[in-house]
Amino acid sequence: MKKIVFLFLLAIFHSGAYAEKVYEFNSTCQQAYGEITELKLNNGIALIEKAKKENPDNLIPYVLESYVDFFTLFFNEDPAEYKIRKERFEQRISLLKKGPESSPFYLFCLGAVYLQKAAVAVKFGEMWTAGFNFKHGYALIKENKKAFPTFTPNDLIYGGLRAIIGTIPKGYQWLASLFGIKGSITEGMKTIKGFVYSKDPWAKLMNNESSFFYCYLLFYIENKKEEAIQFIQDRKLDVVNNHLFAYMAANLGINNKQTEYAKNVMLNKSKSPEYLQTGVWDFEMGFVKLYHAETAEAIQYFERFLANFKGKFYVKDVYQKLSWCYYLQGNTAAAQAARNNVLKKGSTDADADQQALKEAKSGKWPNPVLLKARMMNDGGYDKEALELLSGKTVESFGKEEEKLEFEYRLARINDDLGKGDEAIQYYLEAIRLGESRTEYYAARAAWQIGQIYEKRGEKAKAMVFYNRCLDMDDHDYKNSLDQKAKSGIARCKGE
Image (cartoon, rainbow, N blue to C red; front, side, top):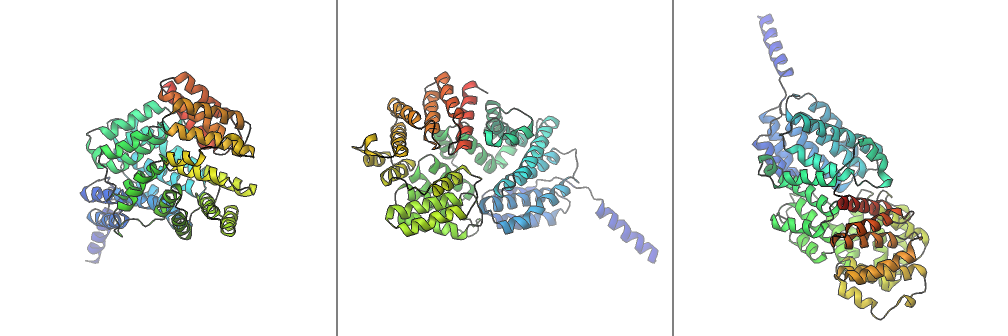
């Protein structure tokens, strides 16, 4: 009898141990994916646990757990959380490798987790780790596209990465070399756009993720900023109840000088506690207030962001902006205290942080009139910015860097007001004054002229100025401006 019981238990053990793993994107997993990609992470976690109970051999819930870790780490950058969650990526990769290789989800899920792991590694300054995982993740998606050409989710990742790779700036060329391929904006954007606009069931399910990815590519890679904002509105993306969309709309609005739009999105988004709690809202609202010269309110948001944020990206940048607010208020002690924190805190992985550190080390303070004009112009308040500079000429400023900034600022304001020919003349003067200096104004001016000519369809002229931007070295924002210039050249060539 004992032998029979033993054999029975052994049979059960073996049947459980060798049960076939599956990739089953069932209704519970689909619901969890929807909640997670709205940043309702706790709701998603509860549904993941439900899915695990429904089928312990289903591997999709583990991929969804990776999404939870990705969003948590990407938005909040908490080193303590990273220490805990970092190993989970590798554990999930090992588990996913036990799935059936005959499934189109096998390589796709592995590739997605490797890419999430890579993106998070960038946030924590682990660039070599990021490079390895980006390379591996891309290779898996590329292989899966060949093996399963009709599996459309491949197009979302493959198209996006292909568009990005060709525009990697010099400072990150080591990363491009790891891929061993040449990207294509035209083909990459065609691939991802085809997925976003298709009636494929996967496209409908993955709408949150694909819309987010596509909008950022449209905005930064194709430089179709107004089109990206219009996409949000035309597709009626829910910026109230979907915090991923709300963040995207606010962030892109601020970066497209549509500050009032961004502010309204943030004020009207759902206040429910079920969403991911993150300091990015204070960060973005701080800039909304800064760009409208509401320095007291900007200080409150920036201070709250810095008090709660555990990461390093844009910390120096925020301390710089905080120092500007105090400086414009005439509070020199607080301004200097904030500048001292630029020297001590955060990292220099982002161009904005590098520029903030450089300014702090210089010991110089910006001209208050030019600073106010810059803030108003950056916020899209161009008429107000122009009024601040009314009656002034280049001779109104004593320092060479102030003369340069004055010319550049007049160019940007005229450009934003649609006065392209006037803007070009000011930009050319900014290039003349600043081409051999380390401020970013001359390089940015060259890129802006390229933009004007590209929009006019004069692509040969546009490429002349994009290349001129690339040729300038040792200036602020070098990596990001090079990326923009390379994107422009690729667009003009149809690559």
